[in-house]
Length: 330
Image (tube, rainbow, N blue to C red):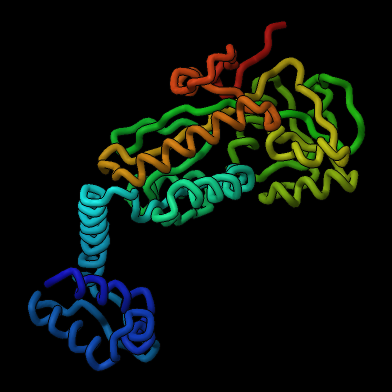
């Protein structure tokens, strides 16, 4: 059993048939079939069940698929480490995961910068939900990720980068501050459960004995913004998500009195996988970029203490409290 056979086996499972897998794997169909049969003979078990619609893994095949994915990831890590060791120019592949709200803000600038500084490093960027992102980091499917909400376990190392604050967002001009009780009395358009923003708002309303009046539950932040711009109902979102619309006067924001909604953005890395030179460089570049966005003030982000320690900028920056939900002083 060798690496090539394992790749062939996983390719056949992904395609659902040997004939469909032959093209993507760049192997003739008869030769691919022989490789799979040889693997079964060597292991002494049937790995695939053939049926009219294609193939499916047997119990033994499911076990091999799990182990093969892990082995191939480890092989890729070893290969990358040796490439890094022998090369003067950083190169290789780095897999980054981002939640959708973060991706919309940082991806374009980040990719441009990495392309200019590290042309031999290939970025693979995945946009996903926070829970899926954490799972992908844990299982080594991506090298690191950015997400709001802390994750500190043996499998995940969390590094706090910046805080942001949720604001009241409306299509009409607002006062500088609006009482949370006044906001809750209105019809609102909010992200659906289990979005972190929605859970924060629900928890705040429950703590104050209030009941939300949700006009629409919508997963898409761009869709929420469009409906708010049309005057259907206001919402609660971070400033970073609406800064362009606020700058050109299409939306208006106000801070929320009586309660402070603050989130923390974390850099998540596997606690069990040693990073390569390429991963270290791209991680550092992302930290620097996030810090620059915070210092610029245009997104409503403020550095955390850990980011302040990393920064070479000597300007005094006072970070807010890092709690996700903190009642304001009366």
